[in-house]
Length: 313
Ligand code: 8YV
Image 1 (tube, helix red, strand yellow):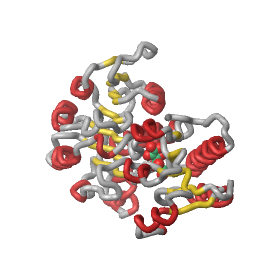
Image 2: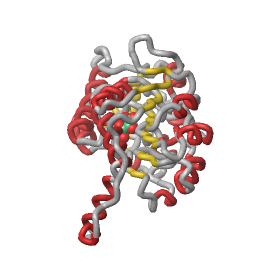
Image 3: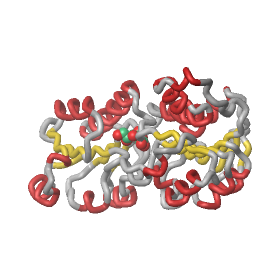
Image 4: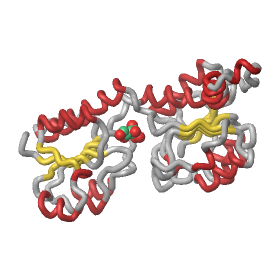
């Protein structure tokens, strides 16, 4: 398999890079500033693209790789891949489901606790010596708060399971009502937001879910409501979110993802009711290694003509 060209779209994981280098001829796209020249030279060699949540395979790249057989994403999200084009051209697509579910759900709960109990602010309070001058202010209880989840797939369900352990009533929005869960269903995101205290975005990013958190939803969640986003940045209209938080029309937010990563609206930096993490939902050594192993397993399966481990297309 050493002669098979694999194109890595952007830096993502050193273990994966090393293992790809051992097995294939690896091209790191970021090493080639002149993309057109790179493609002119190597387009026929490349049979696989490895992408992630930052860069994948758009229509233009796919058109430029005539021998592309598979796009194997180091992510569960597929929004950086032109799936329609892959289907049309018979290019296989794989992702990394299941292995990251628990970590992302854990982070969602962590963000809720961090926002409600002001964990980051309290940490700064202790470190700056302020405790010596007086006790920290009171915060807000998590246990028992009503939770609304947008998207009840693997990650949404894992969040719901955790929130149940905190005695939280759970409701959700999905395009179609689920017959196999007992949580309360709302047929619109606005209704969900009107009926919960903590709203969590856990659905895939598609044209239909882009800006699913808009002004109307933010107003429905209101000054006591908290938004948690562990999905994708473009789920949230940041031009609406930022002023709502600054003006106190929304109670708080825990955000792991942003519209223009790694850019984060600076207006949020001074807000103590907001907790910001740098897209680290799946970011543990254990999970990223499992994700890398899935990418490698899918590529090997493809080139040994075996069934793919986690096929999407
Ligand atoms: C990663 C993700 O952050 O799985 C996803 O959809 O967003 C993440 O797990 C990313 O792909 C790691 O490079």
